[in-house]
Image (spheres, one colour):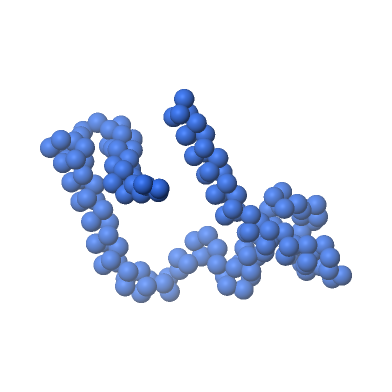
Length: 148
């Protein structure tokens, strides 16, 4: 019974944490929408009619997203242009080292810690069981107790 109560408390704690993270962002967007689209005498063109009844959590309006799109030219996959090839060339050595290191660590961990001397051959074991095992052991090794 304590196990179930612990899971419920962990779930509620996670919900509270998510709310505390999301609330300031949504509040900022809502206040920006109220100021520029509802209370303004002249509405900017980016105030769309679908946001006329915007509530704090019911609107898809994003003031920050609009500013990124309009003034900074930031968006999904917009960074990947031909002129960025020198930046990717500069980053390539570190990316290759990082990917190689992660691959070798996973292979070593599968063989020595989880596979007891050999790399498991079953797909389910590599893709599902081992990541859960690795996460659980990393959490256990870094466990912090408060109040002891």
